[in-house]
Length: 180
Image (tube, rainbow, N blue to C red; front, side, top):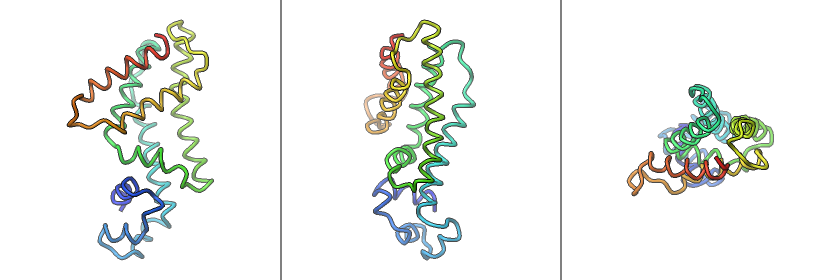
């Protein structure tokens, strides 16, 4: 049910998908879905929260880097790889925020802020090490996230660039953007 909902939300948008449509794709009556989720809003929230929990968990398991430059490079490559492996979840996590209830939005926003804080900490570390020069680490963090998230809008496995090629190109751009 969750995989079908994720696919349908990513393809058609949350607002355009009904529980009846999800049930039809799963092959059950619409009422049967309510044995697994209280409503469509809860389903959307659960998909987004799972994505953010997996993202934060995977990054927390990433080995520590010896310095800020190595840490930012590791983050850049991690973010691209993690997101390239789950384009539908990424699309939902960033494009469907507007459809969350206010309470659910606050939970997801807190998780997102936690992830952004990881990058901002790396940038501040680099500034203190004298290897980064950015006047506003918070804005730089948001710019980097936006740039890295953009990979999912155009990258295709069958395209002219491999994922490692994309990582190399984006690392070069990230490095230059913070004046390494």
